[in-house]
Structure formats: structure tokens, C-alpha cells
Amino acid sequence: MKQEPRSFLPDPADLRWLVRSLDLRSFSAAAREMDVAVSVVARGVDRLEAGYGVRLLRRSTHGLSATPEGAELAQEARALLAQLEDIGASLSDQRSRVAGTLRLASSQEICEALVLPHLADLQARYPALRVELLADDRVADLVTEGIDVALRTTVGHSDLVVARALGRFERRLYAAPEYLRLHGTPADPSDLQQHHTVTHTAQGPAVTWTFLNPRGSAQGKPLEVTVRSRLAASSSALVHHALVGGAGIGMLSCPLAAADVAQGRLVEVLAPFASRTVHTLYAVSSPGRRNAARVKAVIDFLVKAAKDRWALAPVR
Image (cartoon, rainbow, N blue to C red; front, side, top):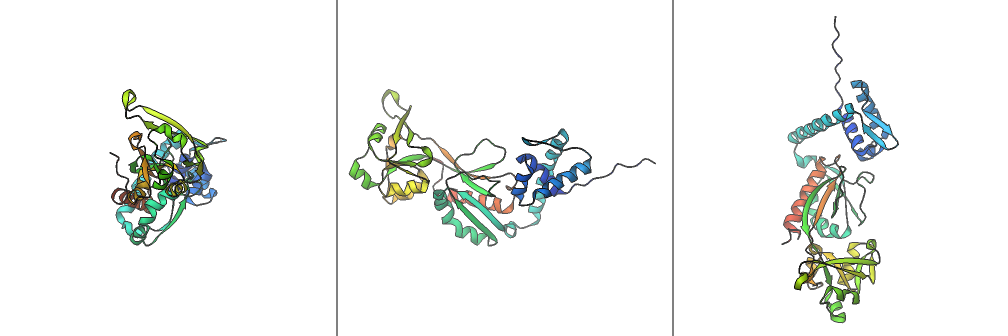
């Protein structure tokens, strides 16, 4: 009598270990992301290899890579796991599922301008959610530091992050009225070399700012001016506070300077020469966390806050 081939039904958790181990090229990185022991991840992949009777991963000093069979299984597993998450979402009310701790990383200035004003609304909407705010200009590593969502103005070309745009903005030069009263207002970008400038320590002692020439035959062409800062600060928030305090002229994101401009604490400098370069603020998460209810809920909340209640609208 011919024996039927043995049927193997994999555990979805084991499929997730396989997918994330391949994405991150490491059992240990996948374990940190999911907050489990490395042995749990490794045993899950071992069960898949034993169940299917094929080798799924190659292990080397450069990390993990997929065999042809492993690559095929990972592709199918991604689709299956997405379907399972969709089923779960349709069977549960999102409000009741948004729970646990969410770690949110951003610069102090963006945290103060975008997150803190709306934190009470977020907590009222999701009472079972606990938020940890990590305010630092340093770019945090999402996986190794267990970050659920990071707010960034740059996103590298990497398959290990998922980015959603919150808004677009420009950066321009600002100074306090008192500073301009004492030192004069520059009429041309070249005048900046005779002024006190405030920069970020990450930029070094010499900083090059780019402008556009609105006049003559050079109209619209980029113009670069290198300045040596008299004051450098280790965070964008400190740069901002120093400018309001009259320390000099410095570069700020327009949405973050808007309230001070409206209330007369800051004045835009060299507006006709502004480069009009548009930057984007992103909410970034890792692929392994993007479908978590708390991550999706917080990012959706921040998108609405940025659009309706903060000056991150598209620049004219």
C-alpha cells in the first residue's frame, strides 16, 4: 500500500522567526526585535527545516542568507502572515487592541512641537497604551534599541525600515529682533561671515549654507556660503533656544520656528535668498513592527496631528 506523504502544518510563529531572521540576517537581531531568547528563534527555524525536510538558511560570518527553498518559503510566509493579521484586525476592535508599551524616538524639538501637544489626546483615545518618549538628535537603531516608531527627516535606502511621510517643510535662517538691532540685518548671504552664527555640533566648526540668487544673470542659481559658528549646540532644540535668546543667526525648520515668528521672538533673515529646498518628516518603523496595532494607531494619529494641527503642510 502506497504511503501518503507526511503533512506538515507550520506554526505561524516559526514562519515569523524565519522571515525576520532573513530580513535582519541574524537570529539575535530577530530575537531582540520580538523580545524573546535567541534559542526560541533558532528552534523555530529548526522545526521548519525538520518539518519540510530541507535546509532553509545558510549561516556564515556575514550573517544569515536564504537557500532557494528558504527564499521561496519566506515569500509565501510573508503573504500568509499578512493575511492572518488582516483576519485578526477584522475580528477585533482596534481601540481595544491598542495596548502595551510603545517606544517613540525623535529629536527633542520635534517631540516638543508635534508629540507633546497631542499626547493627552492620544492617551485619552487609547487608555491601555503606555508611551516611552526618547528625545535625542541621534538616529536610534530601531531593532537593537527596541524602538517602535522614530520621527526622522531623512530615511536611508534600506529594506529594514518602513517610512510614512507626515509632512513637508523648508529650513530657513532666523534671528531674534534684539540680535538684529545690535548687530544689523544681513542684506546678502556673504554678510553672514561678519555675523554670529549658531549651528549644531554634528556639523562641525564650519558649516556651508545654500541659497538662491534672486537677482541678475545668476537668478535662481545655488549660492553657497561657509560660516564658522561662534556657538554650536548638541541638539536642534538648544540651537532654537539660543536663537530666541539672541545668540546669533541660525537655521531652523519653518514649522518649528512659526510660533516664535508669529509672537515676535524670531525674525526670518535673508528670505529672498531662501533655497526653497523641501524636506520631509517621516514616521519610521521596522517591518516586523509596522502591523502591530499600537504602531499603526500611533502613526495614524501623528499623520492627522501633523496635517490638521501643526504647520507641516506642503510648502508653496
